[in-house]
Image (cartoon, rainbow, N blue to C red; front, top):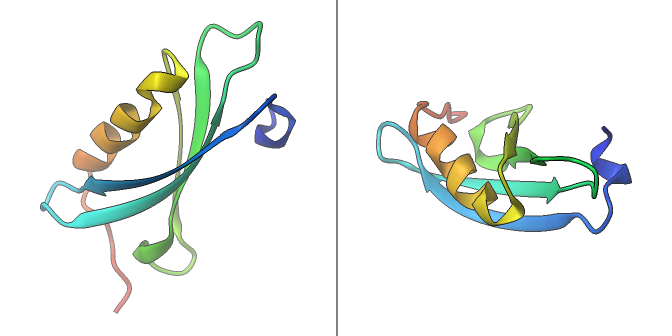
Length: 82
């Protein structure tokens, strides 16, 4: 499923904390096809280096995307470019 083909994609700017407690900003595009059981999302982390870090995932619903993205970020330590 292509993120650009999703009906009415939702765009979010999130501020999460990584495993070390540092703030990490995420630009997230999410969507859910009418026939799909889960919402899919693509997060880009612009402050993590060049190229920017990216993450793909899915959530039970669009309402769960922000919590799910931040939960995944909390399990990692974000790399920051010098």
